[in-house]
Image (cartoon, rainbow, N blue to C red; front, side):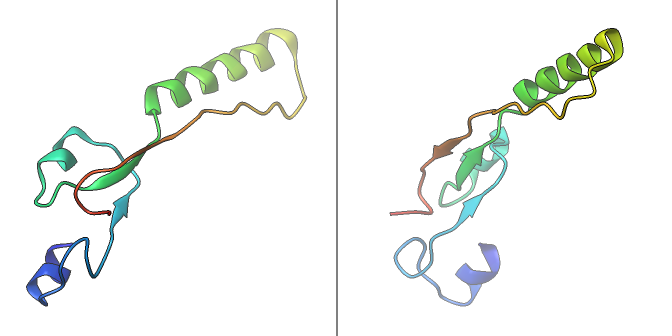
Length: 78
């Protein structure tokens, strides 16, 4: 984003940018960065629970868990 701004690109009019981590610091960029919130704590908890289930129950299934993400629109998108 910084490089695009240095080249005179207007964000978000000429270039929209979305990041893939909703780190708290990203809300303080200028303009504020739109992101995909991936909820790492939820991912970690689901991973641990799957691992424990596999160890305790010798579960050899390929279990699938869906962790919903959230699109957080800020100043880098229209």
